[in-house]
Image (cartoon, rainbow, N blue to C red; front, top):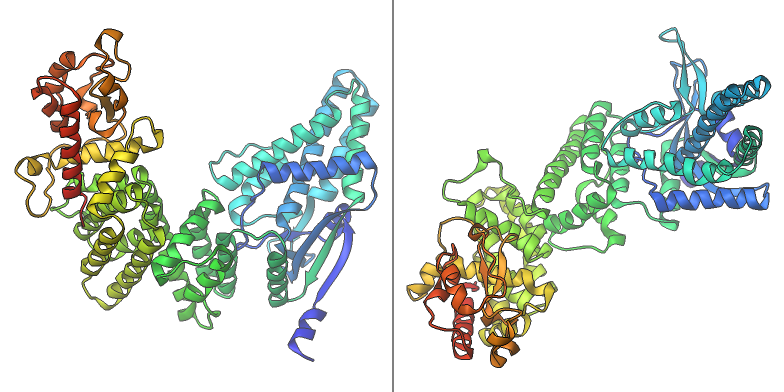
Length: 615
């Protein structure tokens, strides 16, 4: 018999009511390598809407999708058969949360019946809650190896979520900041409030509330159906899971890669457990952030970016091709996952503009001023395009070389991309190629330089951001009344300040920045030299026309602690003279502020910008 026919024969689908699925086919276990709970409020609301439709229309055969499971055995148990859930665990988990809420509300109604001394109704509610819990949420587990008996959930989630899930089923408190735990708690509370609360909340009597609760329970256990697809071997189960995922709503790439890699390590349990914990670290804040990381990590490795549809296959091909046949090969897989974890931490730092080098790796020649440029590059200039390159650089070069790269990219991003609207694709090509080469050099022990990248970026500036275009775009774009440009205005003015001493000495040769205090650019306040709202007696028609333009703008250093508001220039001069900013202090020597002074200052700014923002 062919392999495909054997695989097909090992897959057994059947349509079952949810109640029978939980009572007769359990226990279910979500393998360690499956993704954590991921249904957000929108998805839970859709689930609730389906249940409400079922109740409103009185349907008796509402289809709730499929579940793929692998039949396996646990020989420590008296009843050895169990099902590993390969696909459908999100839906099954949510059904269990719903049943747990039904039990919880039944217990609350039992207390209401006790309070009004309706003993018969109290007993009925107690039996209802106990039956629901024992038939559909928990089962008696006999461990023949240990000689013990316990009550265990009919669904066991993957290790990172199971404690939280058990607590919800049992009505206990379990506090955690983990993203999947928050989603479990949110789903549980949403079901209680939006479904059960709306169903019984407006009813007057405990008896009528109980009747509605019974109707809800019976409907979901008897009238909702799931296609239970059981495979007797792992290979067929995972192949079917992949097919279903391709045809339906795609899982996050990180979830798929986690499942793929941990399934690869299934024969190597110690390495699988270590790797599962590392994936947990990556996925702590949810799949979206992990996917964002993987999208920049792959081009950082390979030198080219793939579409979202091809990302998973690209990562498999690059990092995790084939299944390990030996302990040595399994260790290689585990080490690659460890590398992913380390790279993810660097990604988080870089993405937030935090310097990725620990104190122990600091270079004595690198200053705090240089370290502050990363925040400017990523959070002020928003040059996320550079992250794949920075990710490779912080792994492959020392802090001094990294600092040189960051400042070069900062100047390039400001001039080429933010001001002159250069195409991202032209720059990314060089970024990705450099990132790939860095990793190759690191493996071979070669010392990389930025010479080739510098040459290529300089060509792009010469072609698409030459001096005349740069000046014209600075004038056109950097206006205070364009709010989206205020970050770029602060970047320009504070950087002019950083190079002020060199500029005053003629600005010859390579630009040299000061090594003084670092300006917190987020706290720098843009100042209008001619005020935004001048008093009528001080209005100047010429300056009114250009009051939001670059030549009329300076800034207050955060240490200045000054608000000049709408004072005229003659009153501001004393404040300017005491500013921490040399650029702003230079205004104090002017006898007056008029359109002539504005034009001279604007031309000086444009010339100085061309000298500084060069590659």
